[in-house]
Image (tube, rainbow, N blue to C red; front, side):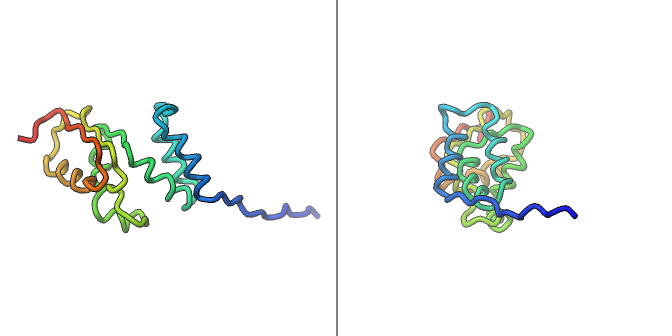
Length: 132
């Protein structure tokens, strides 16, 4: 008869330590091209890491034509309930650069996106098209 390996609980890290670890993944001096996927992976570790990583992940999102619509939909005000967090995801966005987009979509989507981000937004780069 084989003995069972003892069941162990995962190690708990204080949230301050998790935030410190995540700050290295999003630090502008050390960021590489994989920083966004690294932070996304951190969101999958557990609820504590998810809650700690979301502000870093959304503070300066990388927006492309491929992910624009899904990003805008994620910042919908219903995102608060959908993502089980304390505040809307748009409140975490500080730098929104849409300059790489040749915007052919609805300007109302961009307007809703800006409304969702208005609380903490510090930098906004408009898409290549005009708003006139």
